[in-house]
Image (cartoon, rainbow, N blue to C red):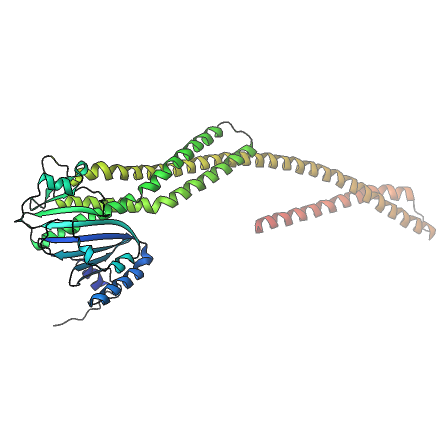
Length: 435
C-alpha cells in the first residue's frame, strides 16, 4: 500500500546536501590550477554571471539557479567552481603526461580575458601536479629546483598510498606548488586527497585574514587596559559626587571604545576560529606519516599557523576581559553614586521634615491668632446687637453680654477650625491612597 505523507519543504534540500560538492575522480598524470577569490556574499550573482559566460564560450550546460557548486568538461580542461561564505574557488584540471610538473599549468588553457575579469580579489593560488605511481620519485636536485628547501614539507599520506611535497611559498608566477606522487590511490581517493590539500591552502589563508586586525588591535587593547587600570585606581581617591559623575562619564566613554573594538573584530576572529577548525579537520584526514629529513604539513601549520591563531584568540580574550572589567567598574561606580544620592535624598527628606514641623507650628500659631481675631470680631458684632436692643428699649447689660460671648465664641471658632483641619487631613490621606 502506498502512503502519501506531506514532505517537509526542506527534506530533499537537506538530503541532497550530503551529496553536494562531490570529489573529482583523478588518475595520474594530472595537473590542476586552483584559485580562491575573496568576496562577500553579495558577490555570488557576479560570480554566477561570470561562470555563465565561461559556459557560453565553451558551449557547455549552465549551472542551475542558486547553485553553490558546479563542475563541467570544457574540452581542453575541466572546471570546478564552489561558492563558500567568503570565497569562491575555481579549480581547473587537465589529464595528460608532462615533463615539468609546473612548467605549463592548466591555467594557460583558460581564456586570459575571462580570468582577468574574475570577480573578487585573489587570496590563494596553487598549482598541483599528480604524478602516476609508475613514475620515479623526484630527485633531491629536482626538488631543489621546484621548491624552497627551507620550508619544504613532505610526508606520506592516506595510509602510505601517496607522498606529497609543498613549501607553502608564492613562486615567481604568483602560485604555490603541490606535488603528489601516487603510490596506490584509487581515482576517488586521489580526488579526495587533492581536494583536501586545496582546502587546507584556501582555509589557512582565510583564517590568516584575522591576523592583521589582531596585530592592529593589540596596542589599542593595551592602551585601553592601562587607562582602565588608572580609572579604577582613581575610584578609591574620589569622594565628591561631582567627581564620581565625571569618572562614570569617562568609564562610559571607555566602555564605548572597547565595544567598538570588539564589534570591529568579532566577526573576523569568529571566522578565523571556524576556518582554523576546518584546517585541523583536513589535516587529520590526511593521515600523515613522517618522512625522515622533512617536516610534515601538520608540523609546519603548528609552527606557523598555530601561533597566528593563538594571537587572534589572545586579543579576542583580552577584549572580552576588558569589556567585563569595565562593566564591573562602571557598576561599582554607579553603586557608589547611588549610595551618595541616597544619602543626599535622606538629608533632603530630613530637611523637608524639619520644615514641615516648623510649618505645623507656624500653622498652629496662626490658628491661635485666627481664633482670637475671629472671636474679637464676633464679640464686636454681639456688642452691636446688644446696643441695638438697648436702643429699642430692652434693658441689656452690654458688658455682661460681651463677657459671656467671648468664651462661647472662642470655643465655637476653635471647634470649627479643628473640624476643617480634620476634613482636609482626610482628603489628603484619600488622595495619597488613590495615587
